[in-house]
Image (cartoon, rainbow, N blue to C red; front, side, top):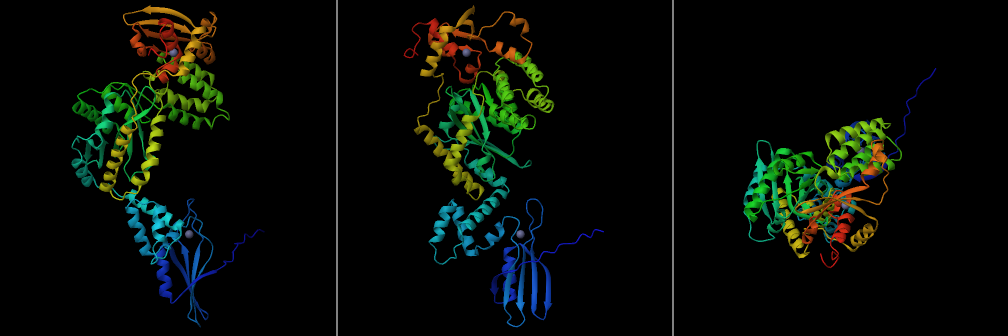
Length: 540
Ligand SMILES: [Zn+2]
Ligand SMILES: [Zn+2]
């Protein structure tokens, strides 16, 4: 026979403090807001009241912490005992220890955008307050910030603010609302904010980038940064977009109004070539307004693929190497053929291949180089920019209490960004910059290059060049044999177009991956040197 015996652990009660009477004890417990009375025991020794913590931890287990208030029948002494520790973070208990006047004091300073350290310093200066621990203050500020995020957006107030800030300002670095819309029936809105100085970049910008500032947790408003990379790959911010919901229609309106505003302010048309974004809604909206191609950030795609791969193979190195080759294809029809061979090569990874095909060949094919014209294909520079903004301004923006106040602070921040940008003398580089290293690589390439003129037209000489790899003629028949052969062959040749006019050398084109990523390559530099003997560092 097997009797399962319920094990009853003996509770060890630790005295915590004494109270003048039971009412005061209960009052202090109710202030902590986490205890419920579970039992009362009266006997000759006195009265005992038991309480348990009503919280549960993250895994759903209820907390084992208990309290007991004992009134001694002889001495009438009231003593509070506690049992086990809480099985969850004791945020509430800690915060409950902060006295009400201290809480008010913290709340006031927090509303003035002071950070935890500064608030604590100010607290230490007060002799009349009971100073909590630093940790308690940090926990309390954290709760206050969460409260801010839970505030529902007051659309009417927001609309008022947006309208009063919509006048185009003459000053270069004064931020204003470029365009906005508040939809009361759909409970959503958008606002584009910038300065004249920053917004003017839209006239020259070709390669656009958009990413969310989610990690900033600015109040409860989702913010996006829209900007462009120049020919050096440097990111330049154009505007901040606050947007209640990330959807196609809202972004279509945002881009449409942006185009109108650029024309109105600067009498010029926007000439975008591509947008890099992780959001399909943003990509589609941009493509429809400007009739251009779009890109999915390669870093983003890569991260997702690596995450998925973890479940399929232990060492994804070779596969990722091949994927990177596939990604480097600059011609859509070659990409189609190469991706078939890639699927074939890895068809033993059934689960992964099914995922890859569905997600990255059917749903989203905008991650390979040939998906759009040569352009920076990641949001790396933008994300770096966002991090920098976060490091500089997060404290200011994060702690703003109410919506109009938050927007006022945001306007000031954009003013500062604009002024700082101008002071940095950051130039939006419009032609590729040839560095010392590029000259060396170009010169080196010329030595072993095999070039073949295909055609000369009114503006360009078109070449076919080989990259020093020997290709056997019978390889031609085996071209379709495998991914490895196909890719090797594909990257051994490039098509290069060099303008007839030396002054226009920067309009050279090449279909190699390097050119697609950086607007320059050894082929165009090498061929330019071969075409124009005087083509050198000093002449361009
Ligand atoms: Zn508990
Ligand atoms: Zn090239």
